[in-house]
Length: 135
Image: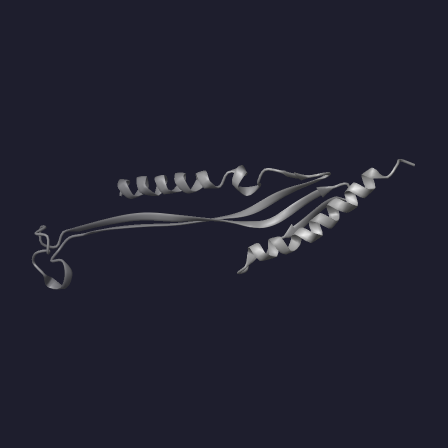
């Protein structure tokens, strides 16, 4: 049983290292007077299992195919997965802060690219605001 606990610990350590602050929020991207930060959603899943056995073995067989003792058995395993996907873009500008969600659908990159004109409009408005003389 200790071996499965050790395997689970190793899997958790590896999966947890993927979910750091650099994964969740990307480095700021400066576009003139506007700063963009990509926020990601991190999903972590894992599973583990083990088993032991004694007795006659499978379906009453007296020996195993590999010549092991009759009815003996042991099995353990662990595994996991990390999924990281962009969830939103945070736009910081003179107009304020705006969060643009990125839906989790097929073709998500098309949707990100589709938001570029909106972001560029915000950049242009911010530049115009800053280029006007103070009153």
